[in-house]
Every structure is written in C-alpha cells, then in structure tokens.
Length: 220
Image 1 (tube, helix red, strand yellow):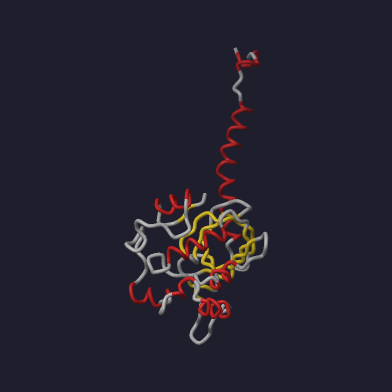
Image 2 (tube, helix red, strand yellow; image 1 turned 135 degrees about the vertical axis):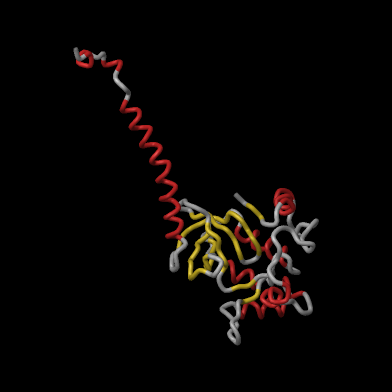
C-alpha cells in the first residue's frame, strides 16, 4: 500500500526554504566575484573612476577604494617621484599627501601598470579638480618624474619649489629618490631608523597615533 498517496502536507520536506537558502549562498559567492571583476575593469588602462583613499604608502603611492565597490587598488601617482619612506623627507612627503587626499572623493585616471602591478594613474580631487601630483611637486614633496633630458610634465612646479626652497628643496642637495634607490636599494618592510619614534611634523591626535602604529597610514 502506497502511504505517500495520503501524506499529510505538513510532513512534506520544505523544499522552498532550501531553494532560497541555496540561492542566498550562491549569491554570496557570485557577488564578491562580480565586485572583484568590476575592480579589475576599473583599474584597466584608460579607465577613469571615482574612489576614496584607503591607505597612504608614501608620497606617491596609495591604495584606493573604488566608489563602485570591489577590491581596493594600489596606485602609483603618475608623473612624480616622492622620497622613499626611509629617505630624508619621506615621512613629511607622506604626511603632505595624506593632507591632500584624506576624506576626499577622488577622480582616478589610469594610464598604465608598472612591473609591480600598480596602476599608474593621475589623481584629482573631485570637489575642486586639484591635480594631486602637481601640488605635491609645487609644495616640494616630490620631483617631476624625468626621463633623461625630459623634465616631465611638472617641471615648472619643480622649478618654483626649488626657488622657494619648499619641502625637500630646503636642503642644499636633496637626493632624487631614483638615485637613493640605486645607492641603497628599496626601503625595508616596516619602520626604519629614520622614521621610528617620531611622527611627521604637523600630525596630531588620531593621525599621529595611526602613524606611530604602522609604517603606512591606514584610513579605512
């Protein structure tokens, strides 16, 4: 005798809730993947998108969070070369970049990628169109990224900083970061003797505490 024929509806397996659970689990897998793909597309050469800074590495390298969601992207700011973090002027240069971008909606325009996988991009503040790279050079916290006899796009800003002896150009013979790297190599991971125990001038309160706790400046 087939008992299923008269089975009480209350005894049937709850397939609908199970289907909903499976769908939710599948969405949990697919949505992050979709966001990751969106992030990859956003970081592609020629792309332009909105973002906020998530982490300041040094005076010309930052991590940003795309406004459209997805994984954070590491950027090398196009057209400039700031002091290495373990080089003289490295910590103040990072503090200067932090002051320019902290909490600001940014417009990122990717030109290329370097051998480390970083997106080489111009960065502008959306509220006023400020070219972050130009201001860093103008204030003396970065060099115009030259190539042989070519002075780079920010040569005039560098000349002005040298005349006014701003930032690193207050020193009698500031060393270009490229020369520093050739001489001593890349900075070691973590705080160096040049940056241990002292926060950059002008940082106070929570910003100072964040600096002293980590080699980078994490914002989110």
